[in-house]
Image (cartoon, rainbow, N blue to C red; front, side, top):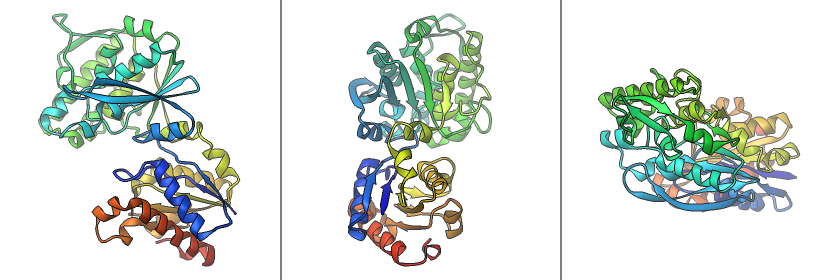
Amino acid sequence: MRVVVAPDKFKGSLTAVEAARAIGEGVRAALPAAEITLCPVADGGEGTLDVLLAAGGRRERLRVRGPLSADVDASYVVLDGTAYIESARACGIEHVDPTPETALGAHTFGVGTLMRHAIEGGARGLVLTVGGTASTDGGAGMLLALGAELTDEAGAQVGLGGGALRDMTSADLNAVRELLGDVTVRVATDVTNPLLGPEGAAAVFGPQKGAGPAEVETLEAGLRALADALRDAGGTAVHDLASSGAGGGISGGAMAALGGTAESGFDLVVELTSAAAAVSTADLVITGEGSLDAQSLAGKAPAGIAAMARKHGAAVLAVAGRVALSPSELAGAGIAGSRALIDAAPSLEVAQRDAFSLLRSQTAELVTAWSGEPRTQLAR
């Protein structure tokens, strides 16, 4: 039997690479004779770099400005001439204790520093992942690091952070375009929110980053001023463009000023790994992530893996930290059975602490049940 193990990360517990190893050991315990292929995956969010490293990428490390005042250690991965930059490494929410003040002050300057380093190092393309950021600055800090001039009515450079953008009136992107040359930019995201409005970056994601109603209003005004200025400087109008609100608007800044295109994060990662080819010949595919829930069905890696497996006639099982989907919802996604780590642990803390061993044992139980019982009875 050919078994493909293709999980995403278990946030706060295991990387996708570690999760794949644990699941693989569980499969081996249940099916000793199986041919097992480990294919950790990601959806373009946090953890993507770990998957690309496993696929043969090279890590570049440097110290950059974090989302506030302190510097942070960050990195990106180069694979086949393309630099993959995970925004959260430079301006991730984990670098701040979210408050209304941090919501206004957080910026993306460090992301631009990583991009500049990659371009000057010879990268022919950039792929920017934008999940998990602390910022709502529309990528303004990123553009400043790349050489843009973003100024107010008096001609003064605007400050860093989304809260400083509402007085912005003009942008000069000549230095950015000269630096970029013919380097292509792609944004990996499965978020379709526009930059502005009730479904935009400030309104939807701002509160998750510490913003109250007043801060959301300020951030919205700043994003509008930025979008107007970038459009007037010859950039793409991204005010209502799908996916331009991803990553606190980093996606919008990249699309407006860098000619970036938004693409499925899952598709981008899968095309670089052996997952697609492995799944096409599998008898059984096992996927998973920290929380298997409604968001998982909206473009996350497990749903993508399940769709690929179903296309090729392979059975699909899932192991997750928690499972918040009904049997019918799982079946609708092509998942024949599931197990949750939290169901085998006395508390969430224990489930996170012992995630590797629990993932291994829960996988073994699930695969044993799948191989010996009617598959339609297994979803739970």
